[in-house]
Image (tube, rainbow, N blue to C red; front, side):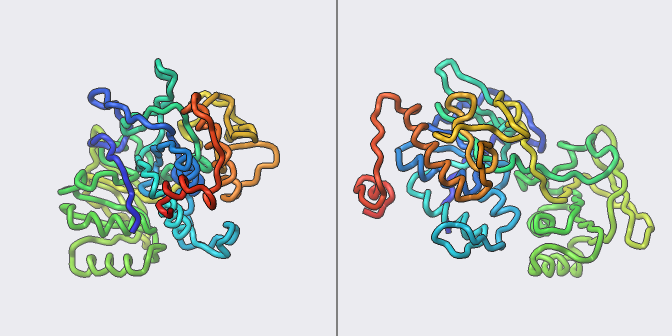
Amino acid sequence: MNMLKTIDPPAHTTGTPQEPMSSPTPHQTDVIIVGAGPVGLFAIFELGLLDLKCHLVDILDRPGGQCAELYPEKPIYDIPGLPVVTGQELTDRLMEQVKPFDPVFHLSQMAERLEKTDDDKWRLTTDMGTVLEAPVLVIAAGGGSFVPKKPPIKGIEAYEGTSVFYSVRKMDQFKGKRLLIAGGGDSALDWTLNLAPLADSLALVHRRDDFRAAPDSVNKMRALVGSGDMDLHIGQITQLHGDDGQLEAATLRMADKSEQTVECDTLLPFFGLTMKLGPVAEFGLALHENLIPVDTEKFETSTPRIFAIGDINHYPGKLKLILSGFHEAALMAQQAFRYVHPDKKLRFQYTTSSSSLQQKLGVA
C-alpha cells in the first residue's frame, strides 16, 4: 500500500466554502500543483529530481484524477513501456514513483483564490481555508475541476451546505442523522455502507432496482435492508420539505407513480461528476475556449511563474494525451527550478548515470 501524506483541511460544519475563523499559517513550499491526476503526479517526480518540494490540491478525495475517478478499471494502451495498464494501476505506479520526494496532498479541496504576496510568491487559498504559498504555481487540472451533478429538485439550493451535501469530508458530521442518500453508483453505495453504522436512520433512493456499483457493495446494502438496518426506495426525489435550510422530509415518486414521504434531516445526492474550469478561470490568466494558452518551451502561461500542463493547456499542435502531459511536466520543471533558485546553476542529469539522482530515488 502506498503511503499518502495529507494535511487535513480546517474543520467546518458544512460542505460550503467558509472563511476560516482566523487566518491560518500558510504552508510554505517550492511548488503548488493544482490537480493530482497522472500529469500532476509525474510533475512531482520531475520537480523532485531538482530538489523542489511540492504541495498538491485536488477536489477529489484521492490522487489519480480522471484515471482513478472515471475509469479506474479501464485499460489504457498508449503509456510508453506499458502495453496495457488500468487507470488505477497507472495511478498506483506514479504514486510509488514519487514516494521518495515526500509530496503533501490537500485532498477534497478546490483551489479557490489566488493572490500575490509582498515577497512575490503565490498564495493559494482553498474552499476549505487551507493556505499555500510558493514561488511557482502549476495548474495540472485536466479539463478543470470535478463538480457534482445536482439533482433537478426545485429549491434544493436553499438546503445546500446545511442539510444537503454533495460530498462527505468528515464522516462524524453525519453521526446521529436521519440520512437520505440518492444515487445508484459506487459513491452512493460506498457511503451508504460507511455511514449506516453512524446514522440514526438511513434510506437509499434510486430510480430503478439496478445499480452501477460493485456487486459486493450492492449485496451488502441489500443485506442491511433485509436486516432492517436501512431502507431502500425505488423512485425519485421530487420535493424537499423544511424551513430555514433545515431539511425535515422528502417526497418521492415511486416506480408505480405513487408518492411517499420520507423523514430525513440530511440528503446526500450522488449523481456523478462533471468537469468545469471552476475558480481557475478567475485567476487572471489568458484563456482560449476555457483552456490556458502556454508557450512550448517551458509551458508557462501569460503570467510569469504560473505554468499549465496536461489537458488544461492549449498550444498549436496540442494532443490531449497523458504522455504529452508527461513531456510538458519535464520542461516545466526546468524553468520552475530557475524561478525557485535563481542563483543556482541548473545541471541536466540522466537518472541512468547520475549517482546523485539515484540516491534521491533510493536506488543507488
